[in-house]
Amino acid sequence: MNLGVDRDGVVENVLAGHGRPAHTPVPDVYGAAHDPEAVFEYDPEAAADLLDEAGWEEGPDGVRVRDGDRAEFTLYYLASDNLRRDLATAFAAEMLPLGIEVDIQGASWDEMGENSTEAGILLGGGDKPYDLDTQVYATLHTREADTPTYENPGDFAVPGVDEALEEARRTLDPDERVEAYQRVQRAYVENPTYVFMAFVDHTYVAAEDDWDRGPLVLEPHAHGVSWGPWWNLSEWRR
Image 1 (spheres, rainbow, N blue to C red):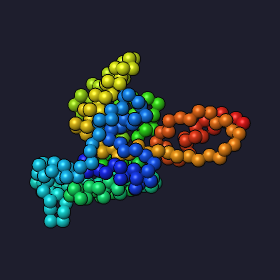
Image 2: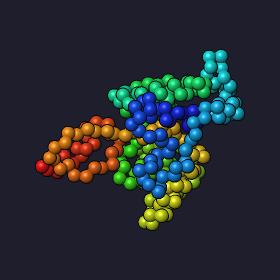
Image 3: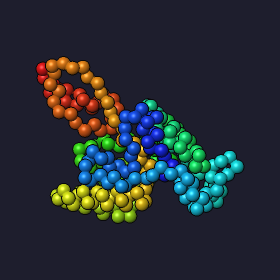
Image 4: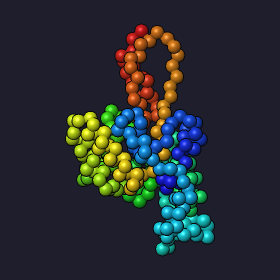
């Protein structure tokens, strides 16, 4: 599936160019910790070959079948979020030529939580952008007894990733952290457990005036008015 997603096309057509392709949960805004080589090339032919080799044969309706199981699953998205709806629709369209049928369904958080172990969920990350640890640890680390529902909801484990994440969390040496996070990305692309599609740009327009709004901040994943350029509204001064 990672090979079958045209991430550049998703950015251009769904986000109107306001974003960047995502292959791992580490965007380039984190500088040296980002590994530019940790990517999935867009190669639908290679994706089809992998499915063939794994025994997924095309059925009479074009959907692949193996041992009586159809290559089909439900993908939930938050019904109130049009962006997630559009991304889910684009993903499903990319999968169909590979013989994978993705049934998209808008739902509430409660409904998605009830089905988190049985279906796919289109999630938005980046709600804690203050450090790379808060971006990546919860997303990729193996689940534990008190892990929230939407942190690694499929309960996958990538060999070597837990150890590297824990090392990066413990060390105070910036170079050691960079090296650990690059190991995380290299290990992840060898054994992916998600299909990351895009880092979304949030664009705001403000009239020129005599207000001093203070510094800009790294925008997390909220799409409404709870963050953005007005995060420090109480401190604005003329």
